Image 1 (cartoon, one colour):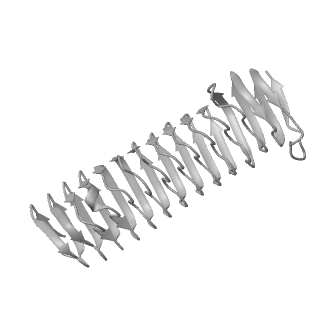
Image 2: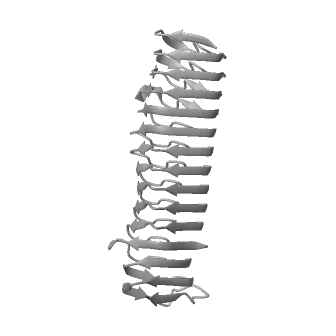
Image 3: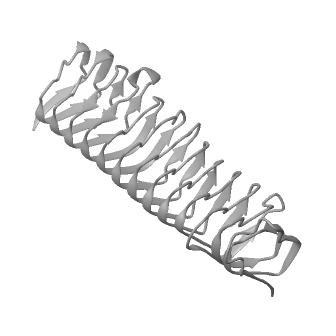
Length: 280
């Protein structure tokens, strides 16, 4: 493998179409597409300041690196990435990619990140300003994520999340086959129009959660006091520990909780309108 150490590059495509290349303590200054159309790339201790450095790449490892805000849209249309111990200050990262592994990565400006990606594995990842994170992505495994940002996981399929804290309005809209375990989810309008959403040992906060859902399952979950007007028009099987502030017009299924502040069943309920609401 060819090695480049302690050098600086800038301008247009300085390392275009390289294969089998290791970069160590390299700086990529302002410019575009520094490593476009490459494969088998390793970058360790590098700084990326220019736009689009890793487009159309196949097989690359990024460790102990920094992507500055100027390195926006850095990884698109690429495959088979391992990124570890890296700070990503740039927005709009990871688009139309497959085979993404992130370990101990911080993304403090994560707007429009991880769109249209497949085969994603995230562990110990911290995300801030993550509006629309992971939109239209699939086959996702998440462990110990800290997320702050709205509209996350919209239109996602085949997702497993555990031991995470998700502070996110409008999360999991129109998702399919999502399981969340041992996590905190706090945000308004959680899981609307979802199909096959399963929440296990989760704490749920925010108004009007889990409405218009099909195949919704809750196991051993708790609701914060602000999680009111829950389950409207949903097909649900729910086991909730403690109290639920209010339940409104669930469509069918069974909800079990220790107590309810209010149960609203009015003329707007949708057929079959036969959900059982049980006090433990």
